[in-house]
Length: 622
Image 1 (cartoon, one colour):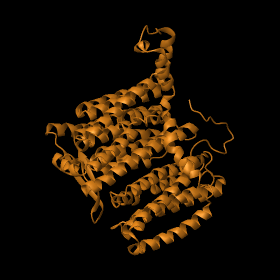
Image 2: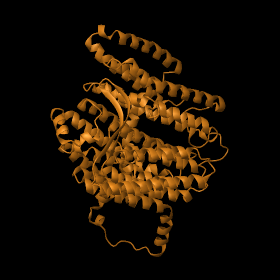
Image 3: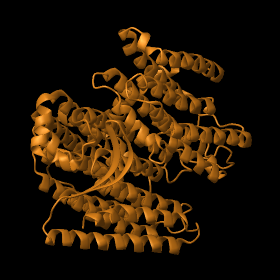
Image 4: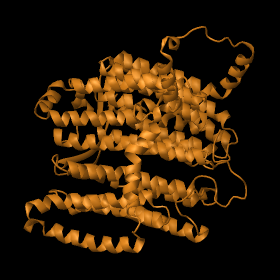
């Protein structure tokens, strides 16, 4: 029975590759195969879970593939199944089945019909990998796939300005969640001295023994889990991204932001509950975050003029309550609540296109104002204050810009004096000096050996900050992203056991993807002449193959699990010592901005209204 759980991860991957091979115009064939395969997956899920319950529910764990192994480090894929996985599997397979059935007719004759179903399959692959993950490394593979598929679905109407812009906004929050998982993995490696599995995490004696002598690291890991969960589940202060994500098609909004993806933050907390259940401060923090998010989002939902935004904030409110339930240790109630909220929000979002007309008819013929409500008992000044705050969505977008993105942009704009030639000259000279200092590190003072890795990591961070704010030369922005990874590799090379082989493993994917991306940009520049980053150009309309290849290069450079760089990123954090907090922070921050700069280049160059279109195009969506 243990080996059967591999089916649930492998089968969606097979479905994804089948859907890629179906021609664009074969709508009936594409939707029929997708519907049949997802339905088969649902039936097998029901049968498997039923037999698992009848046979006596037990925890299943399979260590599948060891991808990379070296001294003190092992990267392997681990598959895990328990009641949490069973609940998410049944809800996920049923929701995906219903949404594919709905989408067969809802998206009929849409220009991106095949692209939509391909992306849904891609999402389903990531979802199943995430919920069946038996360790953090496997979970992170699914986590990354979900982030990219979310970006692609929000930007589905890629000829419009707002969907593309909101896709980049949502992806920026997802990067914060990604780095939270990366830092949790980094600290876990130092706490356990191995890639800990969730099966071992359920061992109370083992967890208690390690946390007794490493309580600070334990709290740090728990906080990183919380940041990742809050960002993924749109809890405060990250709540503003969820209504922006509703720019995608209604079926994708239902499956992503109504039922499945938005509840993965809850999944992280449930899966890691044995680790932080005895950390009272963390449980209080999770409960408070859920309570505040629930109260604030309830107020915002009540003043929204868009039905999808109302549903989004209502879902945030319910997820806040689930956070409280998890913090209180009511795991079974949280799972039941997740399933109920997922079914309700999916239904609401699927009927949202028609519910507006129903409400308009109701307003004209059967509207009766309320006689009295709870708000009437509030003092008028307080009621008006809360009304304005909720109307402005508590300025959550402004908060993120003021305290996170604007400081990063400010640093980047200070580097405007840099040109491509100056950057290349500076990089070559300083990098050669860095390599010389690496080979001569044994003769250096101890203080300099500590300082140089931080300096090189900071130089890499400056590179991506400049790339993130560059508006003129797209090729220069791309080159600086690639340079960042070379600085990161050099900075970690000063630590022991990070050998030449590890550097090659990490940089091999970066070099290949970087060259492919640069060639794509040069080719596009020759064809279209202007590909600056001041606006969205929409070149995907004329150059679809080039856009697809460049997207693959973007994924390769950002450490997506299609190149060895994905393993290399985890390996890099393994070799950062637990006392090198500044180095870990600079490296993590560079990975955040790195991903943003890359997807910004892709979005600005290939997505949005076409720059040469003779027709007027709306810059605001309905």
